[in-house]
Image 1 (cartoon, rainbow, N blue to C red):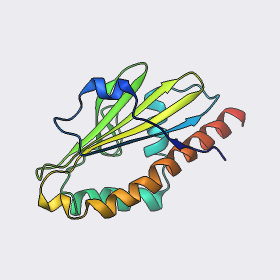
Image 2: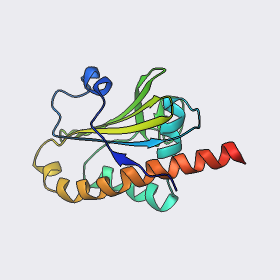
Image 3: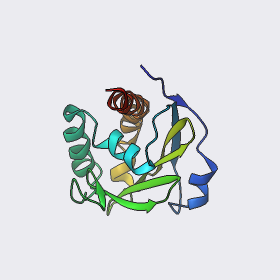
Length: 159
């Protein structure tokens, strides 16, 4: 199985200035010989996540954080997340809530590697209270889902 390791958030992500304030950010990188666009990697990670992960992930966002996801599939959305940036080297989706919470997921590709970065603006009391528990889950699932996506895409390429 591929290992996803924590790395510094790429400069390209910071240069985008996706949020007015970043309360939390991280990035995980995995090596791969598979050639995919950043959008294809994002869809493989998010839409390719196990069903047991997808439903609670969306439900938690709606109930706990107050986000309003869009369509689950389509050219402008990835599992309810709105496509914000689509470039050859990176792809960004985002969710926002009226409570001030905002999340940006960024997929950055370079030869032989794919990097999955997250930037969060926590928002007000409604979203600050559950954030520590959500953060712990995110730090487990982000590298797990990236490694899983790379493994699955590698199996498709070989198979």
